[in-house]
View 1: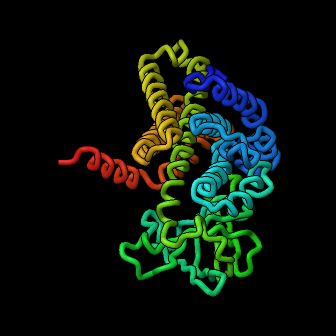
View 2: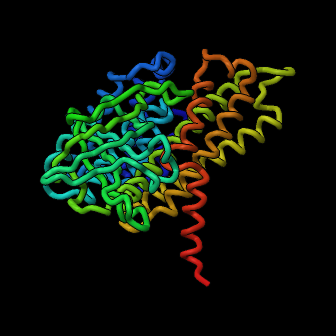
View 3: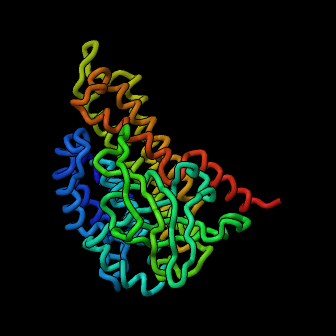
Length: 390
């Protein structure tokens, strides 16, 4: 690493963990990431390495076998993973997000059943919200869960599910009361296990970037789950529970934006010091110095904004404003920084021989994932209006 990216972590123990992950990333991930990415191959050896580091249990409480570390630590870890390869931070995202939802809103039976199995991990998690006709407007979902005795019967289709083929448990947003007004009062979340009759994982989508981790569709055709699969045991609470969990996802995606931007900057500043044009290294040309200065400042601001949002989440108070700001800013500057890194490299940066084209293809998904930039702006504005009443 060019510098210790963990230096901004407030807790020294957490900072040491982030530094150790960074060392692992430089040694194990950076040399092989492009090969896995170009082959669109699931990186099982790297996932095993993440498991050995305890990362899948990073937010699971100690009572259930996990590390129970801070969200600030988690954000720093995700920055380091994404600096090596963004897909690794995506693989862990829905795992931690669903684990958080179970920890915070699940019944004790649900916690006992799932949380210890997430640590190894014996099973991995997937979040299922989006449908063919419902993306940013999650309240428009059509998947329904109908009570039938001691069970619920689920019918519908989901799309863009990360870890869709490898997960062992899926947090699925459904409508239990389609006539409810407002719509969110009729939405419930279920913990659906792989292998449930009538529940299948469909085709894997071929994506511009975000390779190596599968993104799939799911189908529910009279899929029968026990009433005990209802998150929290209460109907009509699913929307609030999932929106709260998405604050965790937005911290993850913001961290990914920081990590990818940092990787692009690291490559750009090294190249600028070696590449000679017009008789001197291009870093000595003022135009490139200005570009590098702007890139570094944007990354620094995004890093601090993201860590601040993580600390807010650690405090236990509502953090949708902070997570929304971090996610919006970090992912937008990631796109800007990766393009500037390509400009510094010139033609060679457009080649698949260097990882820059991977960063450039990975950046767009982050302005979409866990709520688009436009959705983040709406979230931010609504919070501001709440904080500034007339």
